Structures are given as structure tokens and as C-alpha cells.
Figure (spheres, protein in one colour):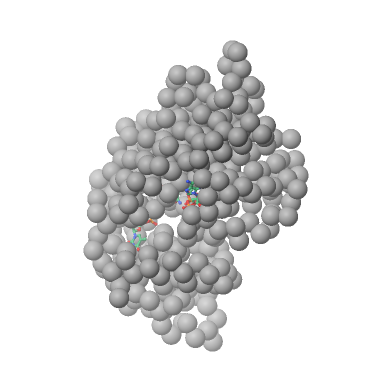
Length: 359
Ligand code: NAD
Ligand code: TDX
């Protein structure tokens, strides 16, 4: 039985990944979920699997080197899927330090633990794999409507968040180059789907619209992101963990570029289409809620992923068209308003006031 160490499994993509893997493999795998439970971690996401004998949660900070080493000494980990990170660009602009600690030093601790546990006299034990879940933001930005990020595109991060992810990627690369350590790096575009924390564009807009609050669009809303439904990303990670040759990097994306303003308009239109006629929230939802606010500092203009390599080498392709994915996402939030309410009632209020300068 393969044992997975999933870091950051209580976050957005991590919890979707655990649910995806349990559904796909059932009792034939074991998953250990290591998560510090920062503001972004939520065990409620994993209710469906928490009772399972082949699932174990450990509240651990990946910056705690001793704990990380002891996990590798205690359990025979086969595959590490490393999601744990500080993941929000705006927060990194205000407070970069925690991004370096978690994203860079935390990653080094995991590499150290895996290397120690997996090393043999002439290399590494068979069947071991470390997957560094990275981001397209390490490539910087595309300055106009032309071109794509390839795996060969030079690394040129701009925000403290993307600089910390790039540093982590380079550490992983250094372990591959120096020790022939069995790792892959995946670089994905913007994910959307259930369980995403409402600091990110799509859930923030859904939540604000449902509450009749302004929809804060940075700058003129013309920046472009390349959106991927989270399940499609989970599938890609599994395929890379299974079949990616040592050291290979894979871009993961779905050729689904949209301007931010298009996304916000689609959220409003979909909500109006999906909410029942008698729902009182309909009255306050309209395009008039859109408010253009001060732009993000150093706002990358456009991200666009070329996923040719993962398609040709490993046969992965995205399966969820955006029109379907956004409906699935909105339907999930509508059915889980209590999840959103619990998340947004506490510390989130302070975050929102400070970030969006609201009284
Ligand atoms: P998230 O912020 O929703 O979740 C991060 C998780 O990591 C949380 O559960 C949090 O508690 C945990 N965590 C944070 N610091 C920790 C620490 N020191 N020790 C242990 N756990 C810690 O993030 P996400 O959106 O799910 O992203 C997951 C990964 O995917 C990140 O590495 C991110 O860089 C990458 N990524 C995200 C996207 C996206 O669109 N969300 C796109 C590409 C890549
Ligand atoms: O209130 C907002 N208004 C707005 O116009 C927010 C929160 C965002 N935006 C814009 C900024 C971006 O151009 O929307 C776009 C998407 O913003 P985010 O959801 O914050 O995502 P982004 O900055 O693109 O980064 C995301 O994708 C890559 C994830 O947060 C990263 O973890 C991932 O690496």
C-alpha cells in the first residue's frame, strides 16, 4: 500500500486532492495530511474522509524541522505531495517574512526529511517521489496578449509570494541536480472550485455579491489569468507523481484565459441565473456592485500556460470547460453558505477591512 504525505491538505487544493485520491483509490492508499492550520486551513473540508482508517491528520508546522524529520522516521512515506504554503499574493506584499519561512525553509525541511529517509548506498529507494506543487507565477508575467509560459521560460518572479515559490523550486531542482533526488515540479495556473478561501478572486466575488457588497476589481480589471478547475489540477498531480521521470517540470493549465472583469461579470450573471426567482438576495445582485479599486502593487499583467508537455508526455488534458466549472463552483458555494459564513465571521473581517480599506 502506497503511503502519501500530503502537506497543506487542509487548504483549498490540498483538501480537493485528498478527496480526489480517496475517491479514486479507496482503501488501496494511505494518506497522512500534515497541516499547520493557518487561517487558510480548514479541517471541515475533510469531513468526508476523517473517519477512514487509511487517513491520518497531523497538526504540524513544516518549519518545525524536528517534527518533519520524525514523521519521515516514523512512517514509510512513498510519495510527498507538497502543497503547504502561504499562497496569497496580496498578503505577501504586506508581510513577506512568513512566505519565506513556510515556502522556502519549510520546503527545505521536507526535502531534508525525504532525502534522509529515502537514501540508499547507491541512490534512493525505488518508488519514491516528491512533488513540488508550484505556480505559473514563477515565470513572472506576459506583457501583452501574445505568447505562453513554457517549462523553458526563464524564471522571473515579481511578488514576494512568487519569489518564495521560485526559491523553493530552485531548492527542489538543486536536490535533483546534486543527488538525483526523485522529484518533479508542477506549475499550475489559477485554480478555482469548491473550498477556496474567499481572499481569492472567484470566491471573494461570489461571497460579496451574495451579501450585496461591492465587488472590488483591481485597476481596470484587464489583467488576464488562465483558469483551471481544481479537480483537473488534482488529476494532473496524481499523473505526475505516478509517471513523471525524475527532475521533470510540468506546466499545468487549460488554455482558459480570461480578463478579471470577464470573470466578475460571469459570476454575477451565473448567480442571477442560478438563484431561484424568490431568493431575496437576487435584489441586491447587479453589475452596479462592480467597483474599480486601487491596483495591486506590481500586478502581473497576464499568465498563460502552455500545457503541451504534460499532454504529450503523460497524456493529461483538462476535462472541465470553464462554463461548466464556474457553475459547479457557484452551486457548491450556494449549497455551502454555512461553510462560508463560518470562515468569514472572525479574523476575515479584519483582513477584509485592512486589505480593502473599509471602515
Ligand atoms: P491555501 O492557502 O488554500 O492552503 C495552504 C495550506 O497550507 C493551508 O491548509 C495552510 O494551513 C497550510 N500551511 C500554511 N503554512 C503552513 C506551514 N508552515 N506548515 C504546514 N501547513 C501550512 O493554498 P492553495 O490555494 O490550496 O495552494 C496550495 C499550493 O498550490 C500552494 O503551494 C500554492 O502555491 C500552489 N498553487 C496554488 C494555485 C491556486 O490558484 N490556488 C495555483 C498554482 C499553485
Ligand atoms: O479582490 C480582488 N480583486 C481583483 O481584481 C482580488 C482578490 C483579486 N483581483 C485580481 C488580481 C488578479 O489579477 O484577480 C486576479 C486573481 O487574483 P487572486 O485570486 O489573488 O490570484 P493570483 O494573484 O492570480 O494568484 C493565484 O494564482 C496563482 C493564487 O492565489 C496563487 O497561489 C497561485 O500561485
